[in-house]
Length: 438
Image 1 (cartoon, rainbow, N blue to C red):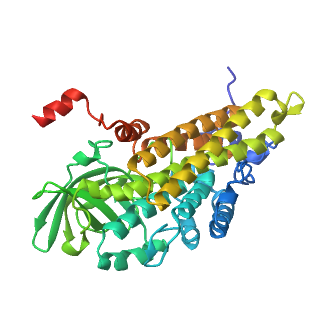
Image 2: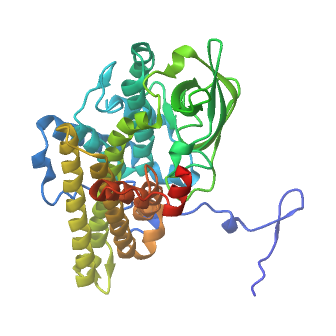
Image 3: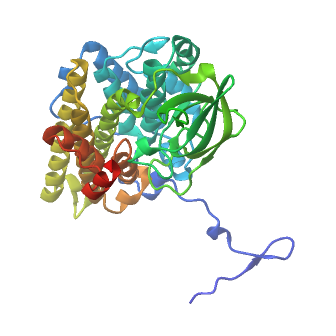
């Protein structure tokens, strides 16, 4: 074993030689043969010319979002993902895109078609999945709940600033004891003079550590039904702390929320949420939007791999020249075309008033499963660099895991579709369902 000589500082203490303390090499210096994702690759994944199915306004929006993400977010995403911190400096840039609020009309919201909102989500996710989840929670869950279930006064009070991202919202349904079984939540809301008192705990709530307004779902202790409430970030008794040690969507600030006798005035109860079923109209839209996240992520993975394989050489030839690599690229590309067309059809069914919960659930579950395969193939293609966030694919591989799970796991969404096509609900074992009826 080599024993390194010791160096003493001015106080006489032994210190390690400076080469132990040197900063890491920039990836472009350490690995000059391929371009990292901080310089994002050009779009190569629209093989079946999906743009032709879009309106001129939707194509212009797609281009605008893509340019912003490649310029503003791509250069910093690996750094913030590694630190598990949120880059607040990009929020004004995202606000200027005018995509927050999605399909909501009026109140300063963009009033996009669902297709337009979906492709904007995909373009954000193509560069960074965490940013797309930030927007999803803020826009497709919290803002949409206010728009669909809020009073006119609540819409006027909250939506304009949320649409500009001058304020940020989160959406708190999931609890430590109730994930897939969210309708059994036990956070309570007790009526008192002038308002309500909330008691309970929420978990996995994106944006919660810095949200200005929190959409909280709680069980009315009088009716035993689920109600919705708008809680301000500085409310006494409210705390939100970051969940550490995540391996995916590390930029997203998921939090644990504690509600200890939090008072909510009557004017901040959402009048349109009177049962758990009232959340379904929000989840129907958000599940479509979630389905477009893995489409965008897969596009970014393919775009990165297509460039990398042309730049990286082994055995005297670009990796793109090898048959097995071409086969994997073709498999990835085929997945993306199929995912995109399923996502597009889902949007059209919604816009025509024909989409069912089973449609949305099948789209989300199948698309996320195809995206996992696509990212796994991309990870193989990049070899050792396939485990570095600098080359996007490793980060995308990890980011897909929470997306595969949230807004209904693959299994739960499959059962939603299964119930619709068979007429039998199978969410609980038969013995449990029978006992619950006794």
